[in-house]
Image (tube, rainbow, N blue to C red; front, top):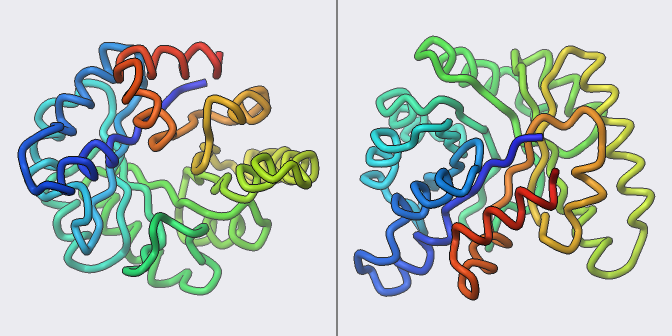
Length: 237
């Protein structure tokens, strides 16, 4: 199983002071040295963390795979087509949210998302859709032309934290992974995964990659990014 490291929150700390450090590009380099398989970053419309120049520098320096999380906003799509990351992951985006609150509603905007996918693919960009583990959204993702889906694991993370219906969420994930694979889709997962809750998800057959950011960056405050990434890699093995 592969590990994608999201370096957005390194930029979050930097933007708190509007200064030059810590540098998300250096965080990406260190994460790669530690053995991650891809670098994930989200260029939001409000630019609350990553900035345009960061994305350009990441494109020049990332040696694994650059996975750009993005909305389908025309401005952001234009930027993606200009920078040409290896992969684009389409996500929902609300201006007032603290972080992504759920999966993309592909079923509610299949044609719009299909158009976006087609444009990105024309520019040689692989496309993934960040969706809830739900049959309706999986079927819509296939119809829109996606070849990769990333399941939003936020509900599982919340149930784990509250000691709620963890097994129910895990069983749904298992079923949706199996369904997606039968539909010919590559399956990834992420959101809310931590050092405490990642192992049950990592044990599931059929997941290609886990994308994790906040927990790794939080851990790195105490032990450094390189060791934090290595610890997560060991857990998901």
